[in-house]
Image 1 (cartoon, rainbow, N blue to C red):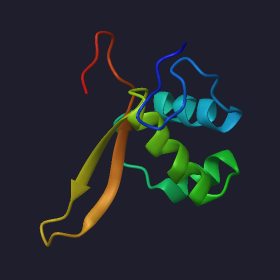
Image 2 (cartoon, rainbow, N blue to C red; image 1 turned 180 degrees about the vertical axis):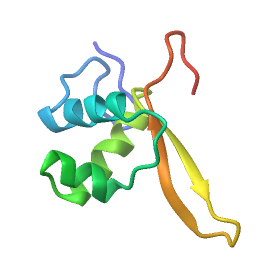
Image 3 (cartoon, rainbow, N blue to C red; image 1 turned 180 degrees about the horizontal axis):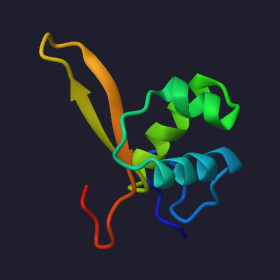
Length: 89
């Protein structure tokens, strides 16, 4: 039986086309601040869909999300990157 991830999805389960698109987009724009709205627009998807999939990819260890904050405490666009071989959570 496959081990479940934190999202309840079996590890090794197939990724959706949009999830793969998010990973490809991050690979091309790694380390550059991007809003979820920018990612959604680039992929032609809904922001809520992208938000849900980013959370799932993060929880499954397939995506690293680095939050950024302004000096006044406001949140800026996150940076996204792919994990390094061997993990870097």
